[in-house]
Amino acid sequence: MARKRTGSGRIDELLLEILAENSRTPNTRLSQRLGLSESAVRRRISNLVSSGRIRRFTVEVDDSNTSSAITWVSVNPAVPTRQVTEKMRPMKGVEAIYETAGQYDVAVVVKCANIVAVNATIEGIRRVEGVISTNTTMILSTIR
Image (cartoon, rainbow, N blue to C red; front, side, top):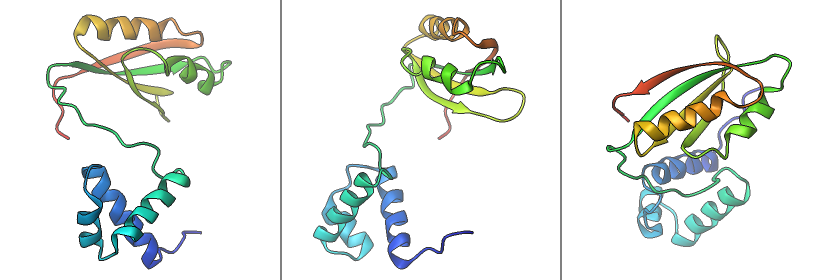
């Protein structure tokens, strides 16, 4: 059953949208945009962090001089997919890991300083126990 959004829930969603666009937006500006007091904004942010809805605040870096790829991974059915992805998490260059449905079990986004480093990360992924095969697509440009 879908949960009905309360007025408070809509405000939190708008707050999250603003912070996702720029997590450094000052609380004074957030309070103006949301029609709340600054203390209410701080309390909402604190509650979103405490509940785990906000996991971290990040910095977006201009990575136009980096090399990126998406590596699709097939996992041996006898090995739990989560076990395979946990071994990939600490690898240098692994930016995101998604468990997927369809032809491949996992999609790994790799971002490194250059193509040589991307290749080294992909080679590491191929060596993970439980990986049957990979199919890599190089990213030429990022639109969003």
